[in-house]
Amino acid sequence: MRRFIIGLVLFLILAFPPGVYAAQTMLGKNMYAQKVISLPAGEVVEGDFFAAGETVEIYGTVNGDVYAAGGQIQIDGIINGDLLVAGGTVTINGIIAEDIRSAGGSILFGGQTEGNITAVGGNIQFLDSSHTVGNVVTGAGNVIFGGVVEGNIKAGVGNLTIANSIGGDVEAGVGNLRATSQATVGGDLTYWSEEPAQLDPSAIVEGETIKHDVPRTKYSSPSRAEVRGAIQGVNIFFAFISLISSLILGLLMIHLMPNYMRNVVITLKSKTGTSLLVGVLALILVPMGVLVMFATVFTIPLAVILLFVFFIYLYIARLFAILALGMWLTEITKTKTLKLGWVFIIGLFIYYLLGFIPILGWLAKGFIIVAGLGAGLLNKRAWYATARKAKIL
Image 1 (cartoon, rainbow, N blue to C red):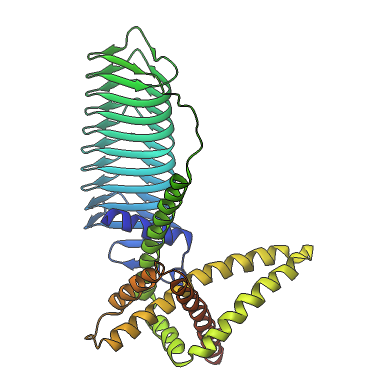
Image 2 (tube, rainbow, N blue to C red; image 1 turned 90 degrees about the vertical axis):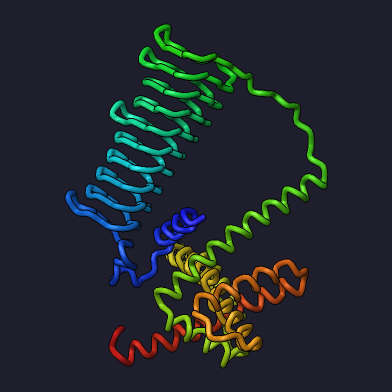
C-alpha cells in the first residue's frame, strides 16, 4: 500500500505539477521534481530517493528504496533496496539489491537483480547481460528473455521469446511462444495459446512441456442482475481510486501551501452564501463562454484550454470544501486541536460517506463542490489583488 500511494503521488506530480515547483524543485529530503534529475556516479544517498521529471538518471548509490517516474529513466547505479519505476522508456543496467516493480512503454533490463521483478509495458527485453535471482511476473505486448532468470516466470504477453537459462517453471498465456537454441528451462513449460510453441531442437526443457488450448466460450447476454453488479463494481472501483487520489492531492496541497488552503477555508466559512453564488455563476458562465469561443475558429484553442483548466480547478475545488467540512466537524465535536492533514482526512471520509446517501447525499456533495469552487475563486481574486499591490505580478 505504501508503494502504491507513493507511486500515485509521483503520477500526480507529473500530471498536474503545481507552479511552486518552478521555484522549488526539492520537495523534501531526497525528493525531487524537475525536468532533468541526475544522481552522479560516486554520490551516495542515505535513505529512500524520490524523483519525478522528464528525464531521471541514477548513476550513484542509493542505500534505500528508489521511486522514479518520468519520460526517460536510466538506472545504472547501485540500489540497496527496492526500485519502483514508471516511465516512457526505462533502462535498468545497475545492481538492484531487492525487488523491481516497473511500468513503461519500453523497458530494458541489463543489470543484476537480487530479488523479484514485476514488469508491465509495451515491449520488455532482458539483455544477455541481465541476471535475475528471483522470479519474474510480466504482462506486455512483446517480451524477450535474453538473460538468466534463476526463479520462475509467469507471463501474459502477445509474443514471448526465451533465449537463455530459466531456472524454474515457465507459465505463460501467449499469442506466440518461441524458445531459441540457447533456451534452457529448469522446470516445466506450461502455456496457454491457440498456436503451438516454436521450440528450437536444441532448446532444453527439463520438465514437462504442457500446452493448454484457449477455451472458446459461447457468448450469452448478461442478465440484468449481472449488469447491475458489474456497474456497482465499476462504481466502487472508481470511487476508491477517487478517494485515494483526493487524499494524496489534498495532503500534498496542504504540505506545499498550508496558508493558502487555510485562507480559502476562512473565505468559505465567512462568506458561505457568496461562495455558493459565485460557484453557481461560474458553473453557468464558463461553459457558456466556452460555447461562444467554439463558434469562432480563432478562439477554439483558447476554449479547449479554458475548459481543461476549469475541470481541473473544479476537481481541486472540492478539496477546499472537504477541508472546511473537516474543520466544521472538529469544531462541533469539540475535538482537540489536530494537524491540518488529519482534519482534511476526516472531512474527506465524511464527503465520501455522503455519496452512499441517495438524493440528499448527492445534493450535499454538489453543494460542497459548488461552494468550494466559489470560495476558491474569491480567494484567487483576493490573492491576485494582494500580489498586484505588492508588485509581485
